[in-house]
Structure formats: C-alpha cells, structure tokens
Length: 173
Image (tube, rainbow, N blue to C red; front, side, top):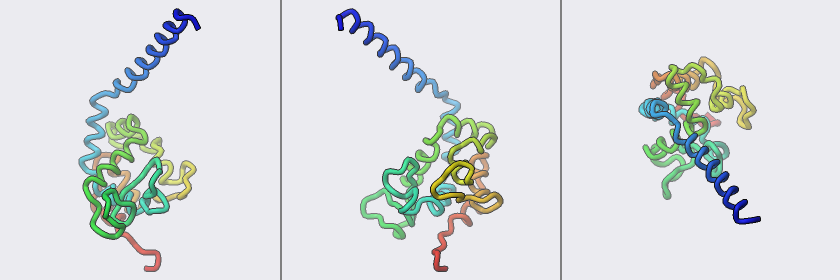
C-alpha cells in the first residue's frame, strides 16, 4: 500500500470513528434527565426484579447481559452472601444501570411519554413472554409485579404493589 493510500484509508477510518462518536454524544440532555427521573423511584422496582428475576441461575448469574443483584441472589460486595444483609443501594444502582442500559434511548422515550411505548422495550417483551425468554413469562398482567413495572415506566411507582411483588416465597411454602 502506498503512503498516499494509507493516508486516505486512515482519514476515512478517522471520519467513521468521528461520526460514531458524534452519534453517541448526540444523546440529548432531556433523555438523560428522563432516565434520572426513573432512577428516583427505582429501588422498589429493583427489589421486585431482583426477587423475581435475580436468582443465581438466572439474571443473578455472572456474565448475563442483564445482571441483577438482590438480597437472595448474587451480591455485589465481597463477603455478602445471598439471604444475608438487605439489598444495598449500590446494588440497586447497578440494577438501574443494567435495566436502563439495555435500551437507554427507548427507555428514556418511554419515560418521557408517561409509559407510552413500553411494550416496545426488550425488558417488557421478555418479562411478559412476548419475546423468546429462557425464563418464559415472568410477569402477568394485573399482578402486583405487573403493576410495579408498568407504574415505574409510567413515572408513578406503585410502591405498595412493588413491595407485595418483592416478597420472597420459598418453593416449599
């Protein structure tokens, strides 16, 4: 490859990288603030998701694209054991980043529109069995867990329904 062709190829690659970076940086501040609004009330939702989806053989397992930390599941801090201390704030924060990080722009758009379009979220589709999910359908319309997730995405968390859906029930009970 001649020096001239090398310089042209480098310039094209640099332009492609700059274009990709510009697209990443175009994530508008309003979208970020919508995600921040969802963060304010996420703890009850985090507890529900952790209790229902964060078992050690599912989304509590290391290496999952959606990894959830929970009191009865995988723990973030060394020395914390499942069933030990309550879910820590840093675990709720990590859960928030995992959930909203799946589709940040679409999640922000759903939040900005009071939940409209939530059925387009992969989180929703998998939880309700609308999209192939190894864990099959986890949430059923009308249940406490359903009301918890839907109310959060609509910007009005139903804390009581989240608490009811977060109760850990052992299979033998």
